[in-house]
Image (cartoon, rainbow, N blue to C red):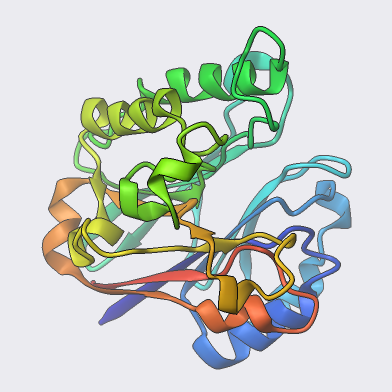
Length: 267
């Protein structure tokens, strides 16, 4: 059987339910991980999501900001929400699901964007981002015995040179500064994670999941960044079939600036 899992920064789930419905109606992933839902748990469009075929939904919402959700056709257990940096933001949720005889811990993250100025002495948002990434370095893909792991989300960092439209021009731009890219690379290294998107697409090739609202013609300009990620424990790499980035969704009516990224596993 094939397991399909999508990660998508939806940038307000209530505002963008029409494109969620459009996406799910066509692609029907088994599990949908959303970031930046921008609503409290009781405001989440629960009935609408269940009507789309997702009876198992876990939430970590927040009024007007942040927020993550996992909607699944597969039962979810042992859900956990971690408050990174101890500031009360809703930026992480995880749960266990079982498929193909495997027990899998799924993490869904929304890492702080970090503001505009890459200097923590004058920009507390950037400091918060760096502290968040520092805490992530302790997150191991082998944290639980007999349990595989998948980590997805909007990590707000494009770590490799070809994860941005211009490496040289973005070296001093938040999301691609060396302190951020080195930090995220260390999260992967220390945690024993596998960057699945780059397992399938050579690092010499451009790869984007986000295009700014500021561009008049985002498609023609194509100044993208790979801010959305799918990682796993090494044991899941052999069963990975493919990963699809739905670029066309950036051009849908009232789109998010991020597009859905879907991994397919032979599970």
